[in-house]
Image 1 (cartoon, helix red, strand yellow):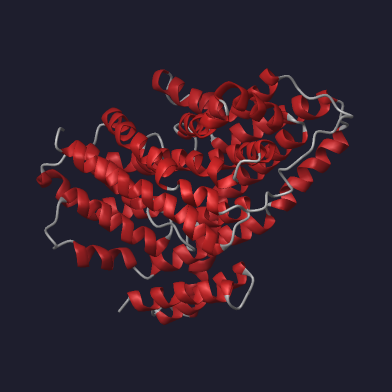
Image 2: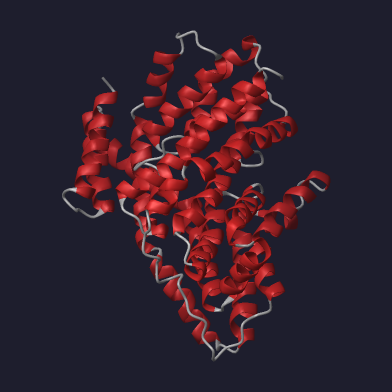
Length: 433
């Protein structure tokens, strides 16, 4: 019975946004109220859940998205994006540009939170599509597949790391096994979705299609690359140093994604702004324009966070656990299925993974299955079928300037493909581990 309000809520949200053409954030708020009340929550509890969902979601994203938008705008306006993309195309060639971005996404994705990697790399993807005239999704989806695999499968990302701790899995083995199954999952997005990548051709967002202003100098390539990769160096480097020097306040500080992004933006202000001949006031105008461009995105993601919290408050995960717990299927399949259903219900991959892990803990010791593979199965399930209650869905939709239908046919299909292919890889690896 608990599933009925959720199903009706998802349908209502789709109709309000696509058919009634109502503002997405307002649609989220209406659906949250209706689903909360229909599920038995009081009006006070429903509103509190909405506030908590918005607060929890934006508290972790607003600084990262804000600084990421500033960095992306500076990289674009200064000509750095064009210089980097021209260098990539020259080094790998147009035929291998997808492979270049897959490698870039994988390297960047391992040490960084998904959203940080997204806001850093997507402006470069847009610049590549603009300069080469290649379809945007053809260029962008394989790179996002890399980021999704690192987010769902690989430590040191929060969910895989926490799940490994809950299962008693070895982090090193989890990382190795995750890379083994993750690479085919990423490549599957490149090959299986090639038709989708070419069929859907959105108009590039003007915010990131920037012609070089000849009044100002374009920074050297080494400066452009250094600024673009600085967050990776700060976050990834601090993670490595912490293995040998734990609990050092300075290392902890520069490894924090928000602090790392702030440092990078300050460096970009100087090297990509002031040093190119721009006045400080001109650079600040660029930053202001960047912030205004993500206001709508923040509201939409906030709405998705509120909807996620309503789903949590209605105890959907507990219901799923009770329904599936006694089915007697393979622990790997069960971990994937529980995480997948929670993901579909609540939207958040992290919530889906951790909740599924909590349900699976009693089965880990007696299953006879490698706990590392169970971590990967849970992570793979947690990234499947991203749809309208997931902040990443709306982040993709707004940055790539596609419709909800096109987002479902591209982003959702990509996430599901790497999830299913990842599961197949885990099942095969289970035969040898």
